[in-house]
Image 1 (cartoon, rainbow, N blue to C red):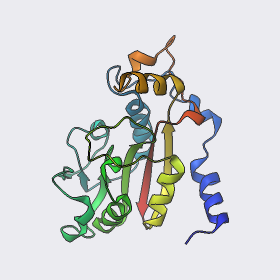
Image 2 (cartoon, rainbow, N blue to C red):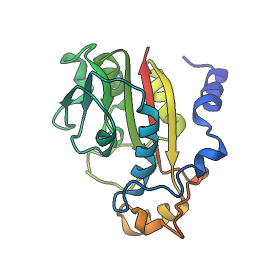
Image 3 (tube, helix red, strand yellow):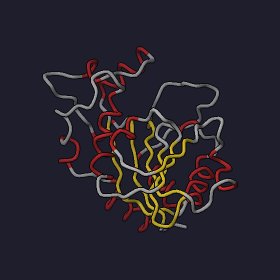
Length: 214
C-alpha cells in the first residue's frame, strides 16, 4: 500500500519533470516519417541506457526502433501475441537482464499481472523499458484496452515491485487535434514548424519508463 506522502514523493521526484526537459528535444529528430512521439521516446532511451551493460535482452518486437541504439550479447524475441505476457514467468524466471516492450501495455487486458510477470522474468538488477500512449485512437481492436498517464505508469511499476529509474513524456495540442481528425498517427513532418516540434507538459500523449528490479 502507498500512503498519500508516498504518492506525492513519487510524483515530485520521478514524474514531475523540469521545464528544461520539455525543451530538450524540440529541435532534434531521429526520423521524419515515424510517429512523432517515438522520436522523443528513442532520444530518452539512448540517454538513459548508454551505461547499462546487457547480457541477455528480451523484446516483444524485432522492429522496435530502440533496438538500434542498445548493445547486448543475446536476444530473445517474444512477440505479443502469440506470446502471452500474462503467463511469462511460467517459462522464464530470473532470466533476462533487460526487457523491452514498447507500445504494448495498451493491448494488455491485465497490465498489472503482465508487469509482475516481467518482473519475475528479470534477474535482480535487471531493467525494463516500455512506452505507452496516454491517449490514442482505437487500433488493433478488440485487443485495445487502456492508456496511461505518466503518474499511472509510475504507480503500475512501483506496485509491481520495481524501482523507477526515469520517466519521460511527450505531447502537444496540434498532435491531439490531428490524431482525432484523421485517426492516423502524425509524424514529424505533420507537426514541425520552423524546425521545432513542441512538447507541452499539460498535453501529454505518450509516456515511457525505465525501471529496475531490486
